[in-house]
Image (cartoon, one colour):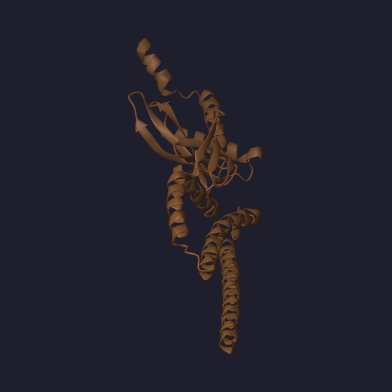
Length: 283
């Protein structure tokens, strides 16, 4: 009888110790998981803020969005590991669960490979500040203005008004026309009987007039000047002029320059290659 009581007490003590052990183990797993998540969250925020917030184009909202997206993925992984460890503590065989999750994960990864690639590339594009809404860019063979940018796609509206929705995974290189100083240039032809000094004088006048226009104040970094004689044709030579302007202004400055060249050539009675060619044809 006494032995039975002692055996029962031993069992109770063992059960009590096992329950305590299990509770302590679960508590440790939960605490460690929480600490890991907190550390990773702070690390993600620190890395993103250190790289992105210093760039004026990336506001805190964008950084928070990226941080939340990355943290959500990590949180799912940590929670899955924690649940697996807790089940292990209870003596439940988790190998089948892990194997099932592994197979399911592989299938999911294969099925959503492009989406995952779009997502990761979108994060990198935003963090690296490669593209901003409102900029004129050329990506994946499409040139136009960026209308929207998110984790999956970049929306670009071209000059004709068509909207192109480009998956971020297709963006391998970016040609950005709104970063730093830009070159405005134009080329025009004049007949050989036009002295080069007269062309230089005409370009000088055009340069001054364009720079002094009210709407162009502050746009020029360097005024127009002759860059080169572009080519020597049968009845004319081509002149290329260039100017350095603020980003995004190169196209409208180029249009103004071509218009003013036409006016000046008419005013100075400077012949173009076409006129010279037609005159020779008549002869």
